[in-house]
Length: 371
Length: 176
Image 1 (cartoon, each protein chain N blue to C red):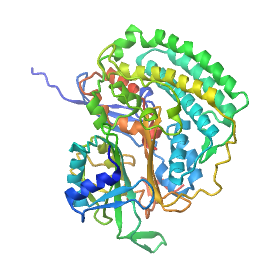
Image 2 (image 1 turned 180 degrees about the vertical axis):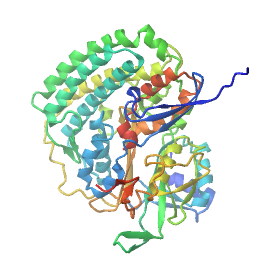
Image 3 (image 1 turned 90 degrees about the vertical axis):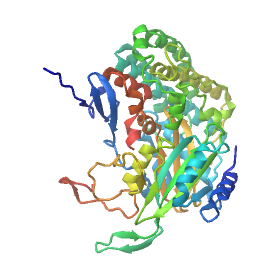
């Protein structure tokens, strides 16, 4: 009797622990091998862009929190700097420093979730708990400053909502001293673990030219060996005052641009962020954080595209103003949306178990993909 | 590295004055407007030419210009007829480190633009989103379906300025 084979279609999600949110992946399988992946998104679509058109400019800030809810500070940062650029507002030095400290703390917190849940996807439970314990310390710092732990509405156009808590700088210094050795511990526990390397090295390789053509940015692009970081290459705010490195993937355990490289970029970036925060704490001047907040925010007619280096990559805001109190159009370039597009390219020829490894390594947040 | 003005000059010399215009009298970024019939050729030129080398498409956004004639229908809802829908392309060259914004405007009643997915693969989902939200048709797109809205959403295109929510969707009340 002849054996008949046929292609199988398997649905992964929308409720699945390793899809990091409500995402449905339609996998086409030839036995255990993947021949195609079609992501279906939109389950969290809230029409952010339509809402913006009915809001005034400052009212949009809390909505940006809710896109990438793991890096809410940085979403605020991108939006307020875009509007400030359009209006030509200069913010006080102290505000710039506060924003950078908050932004980099947020980057560490976001990478902790990325790295922790990535371990979880692969089967390592302990690092996840350790990292969430440490992330709690960052969230407490945020809570002490602005009262919120996850969705801050902290950065306002022209300033920030509250000045730093009197103990903030001391506590942040303590956190840095506390967290540095923990990165070493994480490396011993997970990064250089033989089983972890076996699962991630040489999996989901992303060549540099494909990455650029697909618009990949941030740690995912750098893992493919391209030294490109907006904080260095197109410094916004006051990033040009700090001394830090931009790590790139070197294919240490496999090929440049594999899952392990993408994972390791985030570990290295946590250390670089610590360096930036340390320098910012040294340099931060005194001043009033509310002095530059305009009474009426009414940008002149025109359009602007402004981008910042979010923990997940290039976060861009395209804002068109018609000179009224409400934005005419706000369009966001969410880094995860662009990264998710690559799933098909990355997964072809791999096993089903690798889909989980690849999806975790590009680090998506569905709140931002769907907006 | 070239400024948007220089890029505009080169485009104008190549494709003719009547197809390319430059806007820099507004706040924010200046942009180059390209006629839809020349857009495909201009995109190829921008991505391939040794002086341009725009290897990265940062963002593609659809915009409803709302510049048509405004009137009211029988339920006092605003409807717009005529005018244009636009697509803005924010391009960046990683190699030469320059940027440009290209705008293409198409008539609201017949919004058709050539797809550029084969030049910048990232445009695939962005174009689907612009189709989903504005109903702009990208000719030769490999898989032009809705992306964020439900696949069977038939009440129109949500980000158009004259969009009206339907009363019900599959028996569920829509306005909240």
